[in-house]
Figure 1 (cartoon, rainbow, N blue to C red):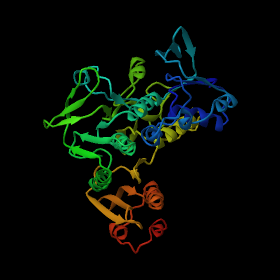
Figure 2: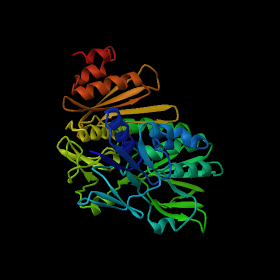
Figure 3: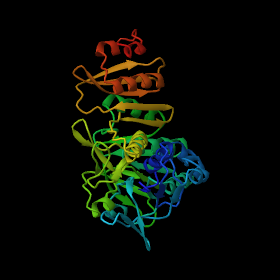
Figure 4: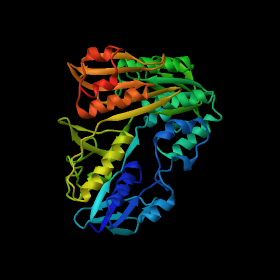
Amino acid sequence: MRHVAIVGAGLAGFSVARRLRELDYTGAITLFGDEGALPYDRPPLSKGSLKASVDASGATLRPSEFFEENQIALRPSEPVLRIDTTARTLQLRGEAFAFDALVLATGATPRALPNAIIRGLHGVHGLRTLADAQRISQAFGTAQHALIVGGGYIGLEVAAAAAERGLRVTLIEAGPRILGRVAGPPTADAIRAAHKRKGVDIREGVGLSAFVGTDQVKGAILSDGAHVATDCVIVGIGIDPNVTLAKSAGLATENGILVDPTCQTSQPGIWAAGDCAAFPMADQITRLESVGNAIEMGEVVAANIMGQSRPYAPTAWFWSDQFDLKLQMVGLSPGYDRIVTRPGVNPDAISHWYYAGERLLSVDIINEPKTYIIAKRLIETGKSPPPAQIADQSVNLKVLLKS
C-alpha cells in the first residue's frame, strides 16, 4: 500500500494514522478533514469545556509537529466530494486524489429539530464540533435560562455544565425516562437525583411542541401544554452516521457503513471506523458511539491494512461526568432480567450489575473507578460471578478475577 487516504480527521481517523506509523508503515498517509482544525477530542466539548470559555488547544489530540514528524499529510479544510471505487480516487474541489487503501471515518451528525419548530430563531444550538461548543459557551455567558432537549449523555452533561455556570436549567426527555437507551433505571434514578440536588428541572415523558419568539428564542411550549421560559436551547437528541459519501460510492450501508469482522466495507481495500461504522457483534449489526470504539476500531483498521487480518471484537465502555459524579459503564445491558446493586465504599458510590440469568452483561458504576476496572476485566474475559457474590459486600471483588 503506497498511499493510505483517511476521510475524517476525528479520533477514529487520527487513530488509524497514528497506529499505521507505530506499525512501521512507510507509505504516504493523507488525513482529510472539513472543520479547518487539528484533530481534536470531542468528549470535553460537552463536559469541562462548557464550564468556561472553550480553549481549542485543550482538546487537540496532538500538536501540528506530530503530523510533520510522522509524515502524516493533514488537509483539515478539504471536504471529499465523491469516491470513484474503480479509479481508486477521491474527488476533491478541482482535484482527483489517488489512493491505494481508503479509510472512511466520517463520523456522525447531530439530529436536528424540525424547521417548523426552530423557525430560524437564534439561540437554538446543537453540539458536535468545537465551533458548536464555543458558541454554546459564549451563550452561557449571557443567558438566564437554558432548555436542554434530550436526556441522554450529551443533554445531561450540558445541563450540568449550564447549572454550574449559574443558569436556570430545564431538561426535557420525550421518552419515559432519562438515559433510556444507554443505562438502566437505577442508574437513571441516581443521575436524576444528582441533577435535582443541583436545581435542574428534569421533565420526562414530555416533548417539544413549539418555540416562542420572533427573532431570538424566548420560550418553549411543551407537549403537555406547559410553557418554559428560555433564552438558550441546546438540542441533544442523538446522532445519525454520515453515510452519504459511502452510499453514493455504492458501499453497503445499514444504520452506518457496513463492515465485516475486519472492518472492511463491501468494497475491498476500503475500510470504515468510528461512529459511522456498523459492524457484526454478538450476532447482530452494531454501531458504538464512544471514544473507546473510535480508538480501538481505528487501530484494528490500521493493523488490517498492514495485513494482520484481525477481527474487531470490542468490549463496549463509556463514561460521563456530571457535577461531582463520574459514571462509568462497561458492556451492553439489553436482554437483562436482573439487576444486582452493590453499594460503594462512599455514600455517593454505587454500582449496578445487569444479568441475563446467571450471565453478566454489563455494569454501571458511579464514583468507584476501582470497581470499574474489575468489572471491565470481568466483561472482557467473559466471567460471570454469581449474583449473590456481587450483592455480598464482604466479598472482595478482586477475588472474582481469579475464580
